[in-house]
Every structure is written in C-alpha cells, then in structure tokens.
Image (cartoon, rainbow, N blue to C red; front, top):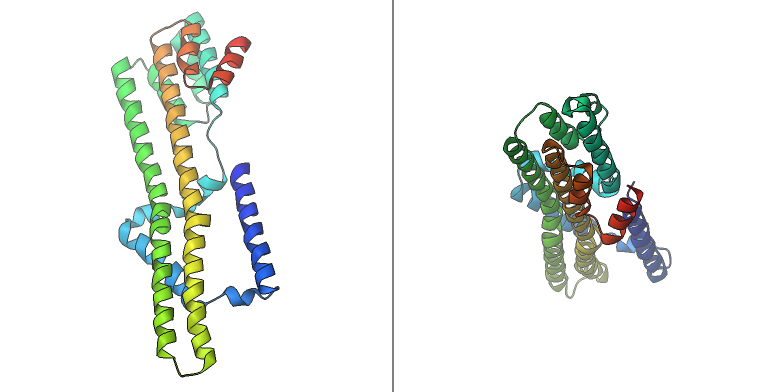
Length: 259
C-alpha cells in the first residue's frame, strides 16, 4: 500500500465531507443532481472512450491499483543484490549466477541477468533492455493519458452542465420556483462535480503515476548499468559506483559506508 496515496485520499475526503456537512447542516442530498452527475461523469467517460483504444481502457483498474499500491523494488536492495552477484561472478564465474535467476522477483532484472549468463554480447543485452524500458514507458504514458483526459475534459463537461442548467432556468422564468431551483442546482452542482473530478481525483492520480513511471525508468536504467558492469567483468567496487550514481547523495554515502 502506498501510504502517501492513502493519506491523501483520506485527507481529501475528510475535508470535502467536513465542509459539506457544515454547509448543508447534514443534508448531503442537496449536493446530488442526477442531471449533473450524468453530464459530468457520463461525459468524461465518453471522452476517454473516444480518445483511447479499448485495450488501453481495459487497464484502468491496473492504473488505479498502481496508484494505491507501489511494488517497485527498493533501489538500495537492488544495488546490494547486484554487487553480491558481481562478487560471485568474479570469484566463481558468470555461470555460478544461474541459480540466482529463479530467486529474483523482478522480471526485468531476471531477464537481464539470464541474458548475461547465456553469454550474449553487451550490445545485444543493452539494446534489448532499452527496448523493454521504452515499451514500459509507453505503457505508463497510457495510464497517465487516461487521467489527463479526465482532468482536461471533466471541468468542460461541468461547464456544459452549467450552461444547460442556466438555459433551463431562463426557460422557467415565470414558472414554478421548484423548477427554477432544480435548474439552478444543476448549473452549480455540475461545475462542482467537474472541478472535484479534475482537481481532487484525476489530477493527483495522473501526477503520481507520472512520478512512479520516472522512478521505475530510473531504477531500470540503474539495473542496466549494473548488469553491463557484471557482463564486462568489472570489479564489484566499479559496479557499486556505477549504480550508486542513480541514488541521492545521502543514500549513496550510507550504502558505500556499509559496503
């Protein structure tokens, strides 16, 4: 579980519920408009269906899961593992790492190490792994794109609902107060729905996914450098130096001190 995401969701809900309670004195039904809900949420769904292919839309649950659950390996642990592999390869030969492949949970790391053990040349290993990083980056872009679309068009559909409500209200001039009130509620609530959807839901999720993608790309680039160092038969200290270049200075110093 990503604790930061969970805390953010809880704080956001707490703020909205608290303010809504004081504004409505507990009558939350005044914030609901069926017409506004259909306009904003239905319209936003229609936009993502028009803008994205179906195979990407089927991964929406995975995007949300990625927002709430972070499974990327710890960079420090990865460095320590690869330095240990480097030491073992220098001492017992590269084939001694064959048993280690089955113990690795990260598919990218397992694949890269298996290619090294198989004796593939550096150029082949590097080009293959970089293609995999590129493909992963494109998949992650689709996840962010989904929420960017909702963030962009959600408020627009809220404006559509507002305009419909205003037109309906003007059309009811001289009529019943209840009808005019319903149209006015639609106009105001639709704007609120669009704003909340964009700024409290889609925007933060998209930004978190972009950050996680950057972290994973950097982590895989670090793994790539470590694997290339092992394949070249470098001294484990060289492998450590190449990989710690991707860490903040504080983490880098602690890791080298413990090595």
